Picture 1 (cartoon, one colour):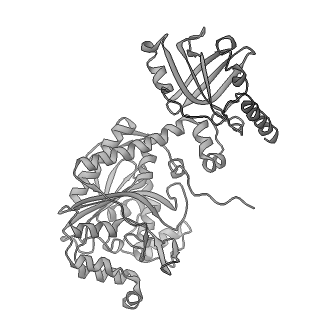
Picture 2 (cartoon, rainbow, N blue to C red; picture 1 turned 60 degrees about the vertical axis):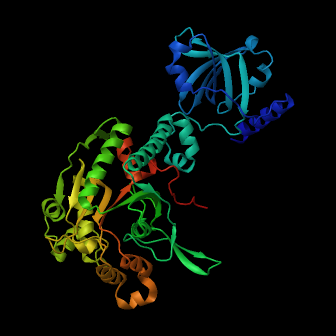
Picture 3 (spheres, helix red, strand yellow; picture 1 turned 45 degrees about the horizontal axis):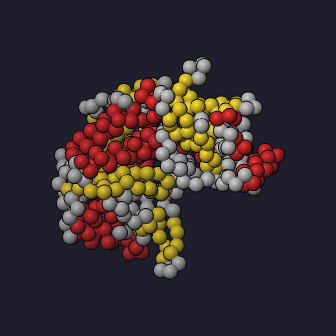
Length: 477
């Protein structure tokens, strides 16, 4: 590496000696490589200009073939000394990985490949480090995730995946905006973490001498906006949970949360089904989505499956029998000593039921203890008016008919905090409760995990594959 870098530094000096800026200037008029190739019939024998990174270089002395790649694709360029007499000395300092621009007529080579026959050359940026060995098809996850830029250079399909992610989020915004929802931004630092049962990251604000928490959900501020009169509201943003890392979890991830005044769970069912189907058609080409060796069916209507019935069917337990549920988890060497009953039920579901939920479905009627911010089913006491969407064996979405009774909400938050004494110590969000006492309309609310939806619609089994910079363990010193 040191010898290679030293050689590139020499070429850097050589460019400067030729009065060529090795780190370039503005370039106007470049056409996307993919468009040039796609429009060959219309552009044949006409001048074109491409700018990108050199990803192949076959030098033959007084001529050379190169592959130049931008974010739309690659195109071959043929360079000949007698066609670039003034620029040839600069061209001789080109390495693989350099950023360059070539202009010239578009035609086909003797082998039939679409090619730019260069008559202009511009140096854009000298790369001082070579692409990794065997860069084409780079597979080492340590390099891919820690140096994502090399992954994007080396694996065009990875670049396209993240462009699809951007397309998905843009499509989600268009869908929601088209239905009259208003996008907002709310604080990432909260005095009291709320909206989910998760361990927060803690920080300290020096000027205020106050401990704060990175948000674990978007829910509480958005509900305050419902109180304030923004009747159809959503946010797409990062949330942070100080918990484990695996193929479905990253400590920071992207969530869309939405609240609809005077709606309920049925409103949210129609919304999420329509939204996911629209995105699947746009991003994945249809509602039969490949995922690993399987095909996941997203075709509506999605079936509704009862939470307790699923536990009986797939885990063989009575969800109300805590001892039996704990024993079931013990079969997989899971310690339940510090788990509450709702946590045990949830873990049994995760271990034994969730992997079986491959095609899209709604899981409904969870025990109310699992959902302190959800309204109870009026005809089924003890159960929540809630659903979770599952597909490919993981949760995509969580939705409620929202609890807007401030008296009942206070009771549940006090219980969740550990009782009245913990409430007196400031563990209950009094500002949220005060907002509810001013009157929050009946509402439906939903959260959709953006990263997991991208996983599903781009056929990627790990969340690290769809987050540009996933959190990784620090290198050993």
